[in-house]
Length: 222
Image (cartoon, rainbow, N blue to C red; front, side, top):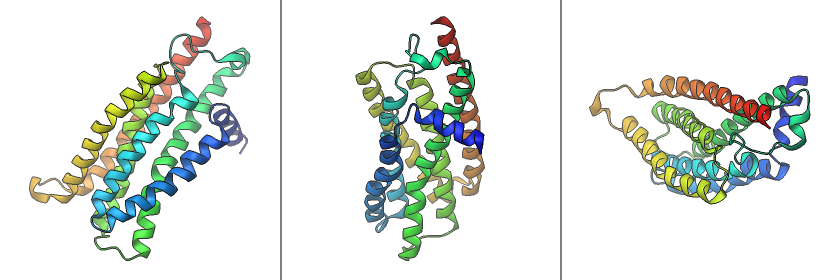
């Protein structure tokens, strides 16, 4: 519990309470009803569009708390003078990755629960697997992109790249939908769940290692 408390404290030094409310409460409250309207016609398309928008917002919003944190010359202020700065940064990065996964998982899970309660057609094991797969896929993509985007100090450059990459994310989400809906390519849909799960673990480890190494290097130089 003490370690969890330290992680939350470290994370909140970068992410304000209002930021967390916006990402974890307000954004799902806006995206879920929008997705449900589309899901009333097509479950898969509703989730794909929602997850693409969610990934776009996730990329754009990351500039607010962690703008350029791995860039050379990033100003950490009084934090870098602490004797526990290494553990502090590690706790902050781990907590951020946990928060991002929760942020990406909440909207599709809420949409699924409401769809089941509302007796939407097409809710089967394939669609349940698709929900899990698309969560891991979007977490992997956004975490990988954010890892390198944190080298950018300019808000405008960060925004332009985020919006451009959203198109690629949308294409990948659409591609995953195609793989689930079309059996003609002879690839079992279940195989994509472990693949995306393993990918998310690998990218999480890489993101943590890369971000902390860059931060520690910058701290030593400045």
